[in-house]
Length: 486
Image (cartoon, rainbow, N blue to C red; front, side):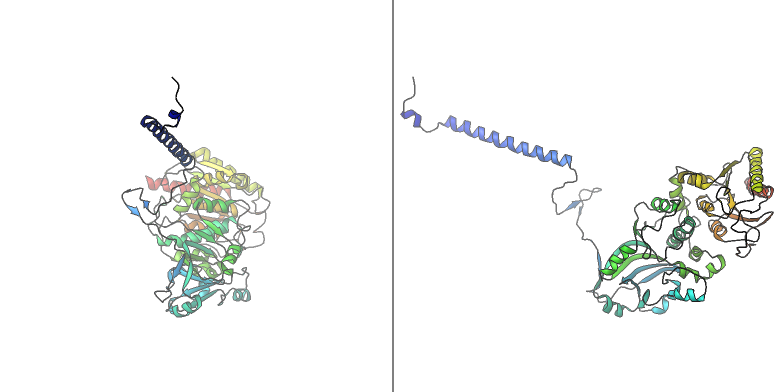
């Protein structure tokens, strides 16, 4: 029978209400699962998105809660009332390590109530003018209050106010003009060399493997150099920096100007301050004409350079065993196609002939190379394997810094007769290796070395060399070690 008119307006039954509630619950559950599924998919696709949290869990021990910390971007003495002192951690002429060195408006400040404990500032900093000879030029490089001031804590409070912006970590501060920086030797064997020798004095226990407790420098600062003028033509400067310290940042004069124009005091957490002109005032420079030599007055490990050397050489894929008992490698770096500072052609040919006799007689590996014809990786790989390196005075010999120092390791440098420069002689000895200088058929080695001299012909292409004498000394150097091993 059909429904009556009155039955169409009857209230819903209990069964109908139950079905309606069931349908509603189903719809709510389905919508919630769909939303969670979408959120889950989003979090999987973008794992860097995190829900806001006021606590952090220690991944090593999840039960330990780590409280968030604010950035320490400023040093404040508002509550203590006293400006923290500058501490001179280590110092040699031209090379100084300081904690809490201050800066304002481009001037550096050493804050101390004991000014007598601070070295003469001409041994710390200069005006950063280009270096030229003569007393008048030297006087122009003497620092003034514009470059460096030594002030009391009371004066610092008046000058700086209640705090300073912090440059945290270790800063290497190169207060040099661009005069020498864009050169492979002056970078890797002087500036960078001196920076690391100074900084490594804080860890005299560096191992042969290069292991050290020193934190990586945070930044390399050039307040007088723009970013286009620190790389050398061979592109070795940037390779050395980026390989030694992959995470280091570099700041240049425009960046320094940005900080100056803010008009706020700055405090360096720790700074290694290098100044070529200041190093020239030191006693060691007067003996060697090498600015990095001043840093060797500081304590240091016998393996101080291994940290840098192993990092750079490792880039080439080379791993070398310890000791000097591997088959010797003799590398002659030729300049015969360079156009300047070359051997007499017949002498070059005789030298190569004598080296090949050593190869054929004793099994030594002999390489005759032009460094500019090799890739950077090939240069590093070869230098890292070389036992005896030789060549005319020139930039190619900079590769000696990548040789592994052993009892056999030797550098042989050919000069025009009566000519001499300390560049590679001092660098060789600073790494614990032996250097021989040659004037044709005459030779000399430390401590009997001649004075610096650049006679006419020094830069020419008529440099003599006695190939037989070179080969004989190679054999002596390698044979003596063999006898010692026996």
